[in-house]
Length: 304
Picture 1 (cartoon, rainbow, N blue to C red):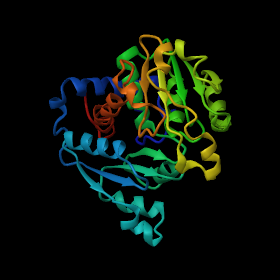
Picture 2: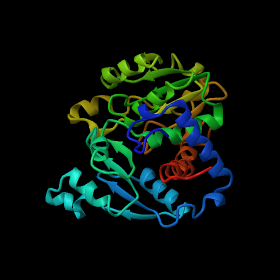
Picture 3: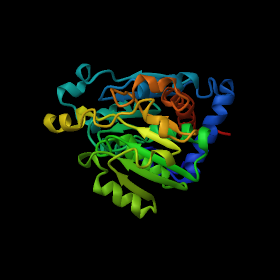
């Protein structure tokens, strides 16, 4: 990769993505080859927001590489509760780890943190901003099913606040992918994101109804309406539950459709979809381990 830090999917070139995903494929095929590869290294986990998949998969990935982990713990049990700044927190933690994985509720927090430390910082989600390591595992999942060119991808749900959406859309501009965005009017892509996609040459189409585009999709990426991101509870209630799919919905889909979700889900994907041939979201979550192993191996100086 061209950078020591991974802050945004916009950093990633096609070659960067393919290098990490090729290594992830190698990890999945022969995990023993990578075991203890970075014994003696330490990964610092700094999560200012709740996390299940991202935190646990990074920890699992680290342990499989022989990397120890140190965990800041909850905000309530840390010096952040005493008023310590993010800059001071990461400057201290830099002395405890060889790389930092940071999740924070404020957009731009990971970029700020990277300015104060010399060890690699991985953005594990910064508010409604970016989540690039999630994007890498999303692309890995898509590539294993379809490859990454001549694709038609539908992204549905919370496009305004969805950091996984913003990251994935940016990364797909490196490939021959037609992007369809399905959402309520109030949760459309932010204007700045649309501008960046157009500037990158993306083929972008926006819709309010899934039905008009479902039959042509290779991938349907469903996202949760994120209650915690709404500044107004009444605005959340207006759109909660508006975009849902079930097995009947997918009767109009192509046979090769892949249904994905960054999880957690609430009610946007019915449980009966789990038993269909389209569901990939649990496999997608499991892919976080080999992909994050590949990413950490790259950032910590792994060799071919």
